[in-house]
Image (cartoon, rainbow, N blue to C red; front, side, top):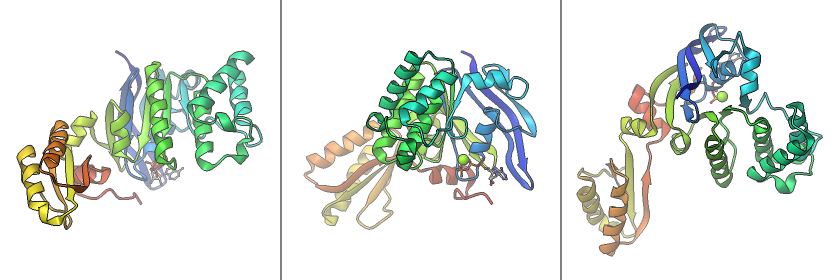
Length: 314
Ligand SMILES: Nc1ncnc2c1ncn2[C@@H]1O[C@H](COP(=O)(O)OP(=O)(O)OP(=O)(O)O)[C@@H](O)[C@H]1O
Ligand SMILES: [Mg+2]
């Protein structure tokens, strides 16, 4: 396999702020790289450099083997970028915007229309297709931006926090879109602040903070760093808490903790442990108000990696 994009030692300063302090990022073709980090970590700066919209002070980056500075035109032909690059005209309808972009990309009118209809369907905008973009809600507008960046079937797609501001159902839809893009052979660089989202989509994740990669690995490897998954249980009758704790301990092979009154938690290494816990609690005839298997949050990953909470960079 070959790399779809690669950045090595990128440094970018804005006055006294060092946005990137020597960052390496890479993804194999046909995979999703998740770039996970808190506000101000440098995610957008890295994307803009890979998209030829900004020049690094040091380091180099290539997309499809083309250098982002020397061969910027070749790079732009390969990429789709949400936001700045694909700008939507407020007065045109959803369909008109996408058809116009298709024509600018030299698609035949019929193909441009077909592609527009397909993308509007993907992004659940078919009903709004003939309304001017200025009448769209924030979430609709964001989806139209995304659709616009995909008209040309880019080989490499940058999605900079694509689900921020979307409701949970639309977020799931977006995840489906990302999966089908990858299924079609595209490579995706996805930035996010949510470990859950990177876990759902990414083949590999680079965790960044203060312009540096502080961890890199598969989602499973990262979760291990932060102690894997946790089962949480809250029996309806608090008097049954000791029985629930005993079940959790027996299944997980570890002592439970009680982070809040009436609740017990235990870390687990194996997803199947959860099914066993559900069964045993049911067999014991214990009713529960809350029973969940959850990932560590980005905060917990950060805490494990840095010993400090994820903070907003100054
Ligand atoms: N054009 C600019 N001028 C000055 N400082 C900038 C500029 N762009 C980014 N920065 C600074 O660089 C750092 C990294 O910003 P960047 O936008 O890359 O972070 P981010 O990870 O995308 O954050 P967010 O999650 O908030 O989008 C921040 O401290 C930011 O204030
Ligand atoms: Mg950003």
